[in-house]
Image 1 (tube, rainbow, N blue to C red):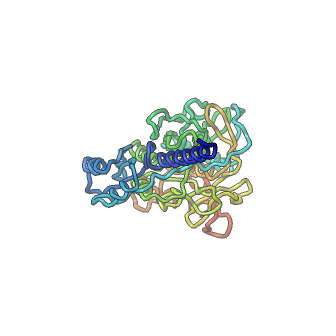
Image 2: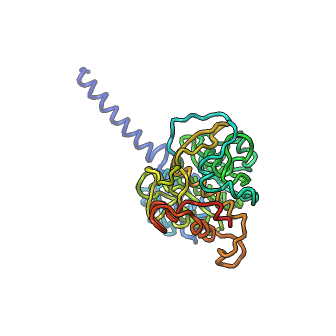
Image 3: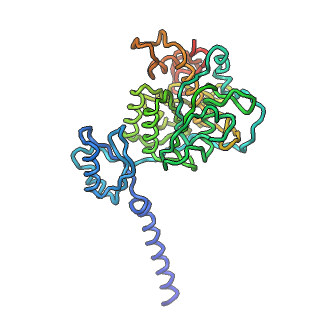
Length: 393
């Protein structure tokens, strides 16, 4: 074989191999991962029969949306399944990511306790002497997990779930622990203190060590939150894709009485999902001058704003770190929700049942927020900066 033919053969082989690898990523060994949503009349056994008939490999069930996560072998199989009676939708199981922006700071060991500027800015510390600081409100941190060894968190972390592998919910990324600390770091002598330092924190690990994960794992996390009596869910994560099954799960969670809070996004443009859903309190990010962060997403979906620039909080293991992002703004609001849930519903009890529901909580937060930007509602700050002290009055 001539040298020219050898080169040509090698190039062709490399091209074929690359094509095979690309195919395996999309439709081969890794599978074409989809969320299949069925009509309400199609029960679990009928679902399994339909999936089996089309060669679908079932990954998990999603009962809250009457669906399942599957791997399909080809686009033809996807089209065939989509056309079956009883199948409402076949959607790509999109990927969501954390919404924090890395800083130059490294994780540090526990220093003497400080009051983070964000907690101070939302006036949370003014609430603590006159309340039980959200004890025992259950807050689900739907994220990368929470450190199971952090001395500034461990007493408040009451359990959790890993919807990715079913294994440990402990944080192997750091983002979830940072978020958890903003919500409910202990009021002790070390590190930081959270907005609601007596809240019960639950780690709902739906994102991997890389800070990303499938929408279906988030849906399963929301199912777990409802089944285990969570009262507040914080989602400092987002995706650019609107997946109807995700929206259905959000609606089911809110209808179960859970208040949902999410980061608006860090694109500087449109609000991402799930924050863009009307059932979720969407939070943009401000700096220490009460100015919208340049990275913060904005738009008509924004409901409130909160501190999200240079936020110091707990991190994975036993460390502390400074991060920025709407990921940091959202838990300030989630913490305030926990504080509000421990106060009488009073004037805001629109359905006269004596219990806070998500709409009533949102109305209270919006009506007591500190107005920023143009007067009244705007698409940068929503109804304004969340104000814990005003919200619990």
